[in-house]
Length: 245
Length: 248
Image 1 (cartoon, rainbow over the protein chains, first blue to last red):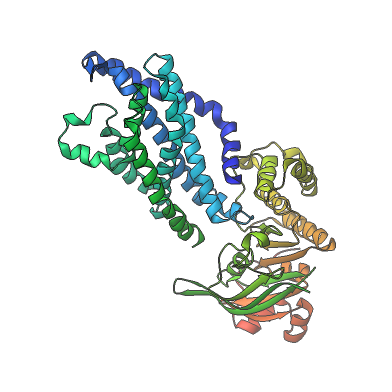
Image 2: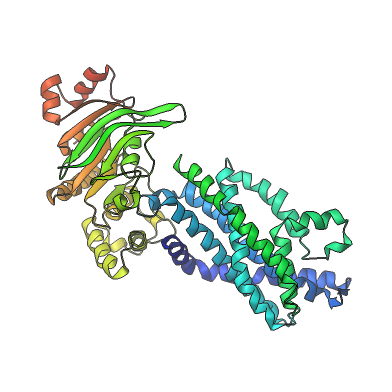
């Protein structure tokens, strides 16, 4: 909790610069893909292309917020700033510290996801007020992405190794998550692989709520909760090894 | 009464034995020093004492509590001044103290007046709103000292508190440490400067290759082995202490 507060204190100092970018990126995507590509692809699943991708942007934007924070951010705090070492000389122990990083990651997920929800709602791209229900679920997905990031941080030999993670894991997941096109147009294997990625389920949830379909999300939600729970012990175990030795 | 008691303390890093079965006790109100070259195991001993790493074997108790069983309760009563600067670069000078106090669950209405008091103590009041990167090396050291005092510690651990400082800043740190000792605080320091140990410490443990080769007052060590602490070290280990002499 104290660790989370530290991150909030830092964030509130820096938010002016990062918050503007927060709006800028999704608008760029929406304009480029939605209007640019949307001029050729007029409709997907019976809706204008820009309306199709808008809910997916909630998912991807919240995901990248967490991933950046808990890979580069956490790594810099451990290795370059030695912030972890300083904090561990206080009554805060390593488990509190890792929990703080994870909950802060999930907080950013909510913060960034909510920003996008506001933006796309203002653009009139959301059909249903049920979209509000996405906000608490961004916490669960945020925890998963934080868990994955911290496991990566605990394992990488150096900061350059994150490139592999981004190129080989994050980018494919981003492209084949169903944000930009429905996966049923792809060979079935793609859908099968996508099923094992958290982003795919988060995109499904966002899109269902956005179009007012509350019942479709149950399976995806259960998937996210189970995976969040399965991954939970690993960041603690691996980071303890990394930081203490 | 002993505040720190270590019995047969061993710490291995993989196959390397950094600390090799050492015993020592540090009394309440004492200024205790670990003297030795880099790699002697001093920092490892400190890290065990402030519960950052766990001993491989042996018992270490602080304030009567075991370091493995109650690290958080021990750490609440300890102040640590690390060897390397680990101030929070995302925060200002004053914020560094307030946020650090929060890790000890000290509320802002208590930590704020305390932080100002400490900034006065280390002569950094006018730098309160400055970012860490704009401080000089000596100022960062003084701020680290102030931060280590934010929880009113009973035991202060100083890992090479003056390494890399110019003589003037070094004397200013020594002066502060003597003031703290006069208030009854227990202090433990590591150093590879003979003069620092001789000037400040009530008792000194001389470390070499993970072992303690002698523990006594600087006066006794010099009386027994002759010369100054540097000669004592040479006599006990057969080697010269690596590290620069300090001009006073």
